[in-house]
Length: 137
Image (cartoon, rainbow, N blue to C red; front, side):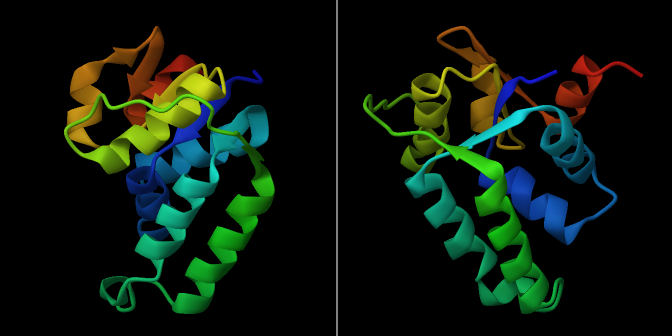
């Protein structure tokens, strides 16, 4: 399909921690059919979150590091020229900045604050399940 898609950290973490989740299925589809967009800031956040000790009991550190390395090689980096401040949590704005600056077709998130926005500047904000619905049965 070659859509330009932004995945937020919540979806990526769930994809690693819960391999049979909607998040993992959405990421697997996007990796094979779409362009994954990220910025230096969103990749830094992903690395910081994935290294938290609370995930040690859920997923081996080596697997988390391997996932990060694979994800970094799979994404198209987006330079951020335009900053935004739309979300209650400023860290969520990092993903909206990637979407706007990268001319994304959608943002995929599990963050309720972002989902409640529905769209930003015409870019839909979708749950992983809603993203998968776009791909048909």
